[in-house]
Image 1 (cartoon, rainbow over the protein chains, first blue to last red):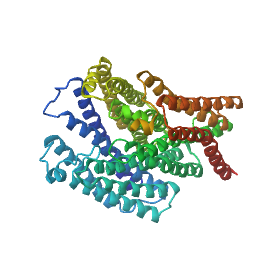
Image 2: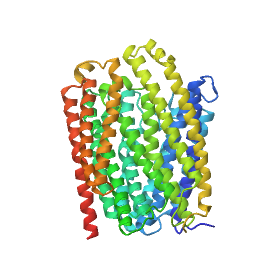
Image 3: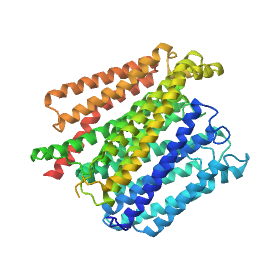
Image 4: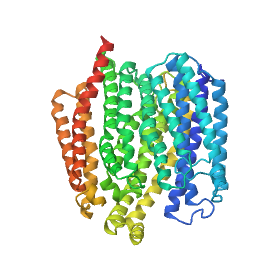
Length: 474
Length: 108
């Protein structure tokens, strides 16, 4: 660990995970740009990297970089929370290389082989064809082995060291996170049954286990960055777990409207979807409460200095509360009821929601963790933002908001023209696609995608250089 | 059949824009309600701002009503929306109470 202030190997391993996550994040954005370009110029990279391939890499890379960053985040916070080195750190390092190598092979197969025969060999060696989790079965099994090893490290460390509330929640959450993945590994030729189990993975990840995970990270971040009271933060975490599981699990009903499941899912989906904004609203109270209390106490002592120990990371954490509220909350609530979803399903509304929700709820907080790691690695006591930090944050957040607005506009055209006016007919589909509002929405999505991609490079430049800046308090 | 179970009539072409605006405002006004309530409680805002938080809750509930009307919801969904409105009203009080109790217990 030359030139590093890291005292624990666990934190060093975390930086490996963060580094690989950042690379895959770049790949996600690159192939997103390719797919966005193909909406505007359908012949772009035709029969070289077709839309189906570009989109597959775009959305699978999204999941992979976030999983890498999430595992890295756990390795980062474990020594702080438990007070000891992570148990089985050697195993953790071996699993990192196995995981990274598997992902590289999977992506190369996606790019070079692309498709295979309609039999079991494609499922085992190329991809499974389930959006977001398209890894071939051999990689599925490898992922399960890697995650089981990671869970062993987490449990062994939690049981040996100080088991804080955050670690306890993470231990339960990561077990659910891994267990739910198994639901997406089976094969059936009944598309309704296949989709039924596939949603167990996707929905119960993003609206239950991942939300609890980022709640735990937010709790850790608020303690380390603004010195929030641990018991208050952990109390909040338990409230959030209860609320998310209360509304989130059966909120899955909003994915079961039109896939061939029984009609009672319409009512279940409507009721629990109506309740789903509540945890997000509660999260907003939580951040405001902690920041307000801590800042108020500093002001009462006559101190005008900010209580924030890592300003770039805190900015991303605040953007998480805002982005989660907008992306998962507002854009989710738009079309979560079956009465509206009947018209919006499968339009660019879904894409707008997906972009802002994944970014707002998860990417923001994980980028914040990158900055916490830079701070720890460089031994910085109070880390200030640089011009690059501000540019990166503005370009990425502005770019994603712009893409979301453009996709919403295009989706609105599809709802009105293709669905409401033409009744979801073949002619209606093309009438919607040909609308100038739809095509201009696609143009603007591409432009804002470029802004986001450029912002990513500024972010990487900042992460590589901010630790050496001289305006921090060390 | 979908219409019979879910809604009393189809959503009209001219109803989509107000529907989407109403559903957006549900969360925007709800956010203002919760934000102002919490900010007053942690003394980031003066006490006179508190009535405005409840004004925003009334607006939230009204937008939920509008949303349900434009969707032409059935009785069940209408009840779910009322539960959601009450949940938004009670939530900040309950969460703040629990957080503050824990905070006080650890301060004193």
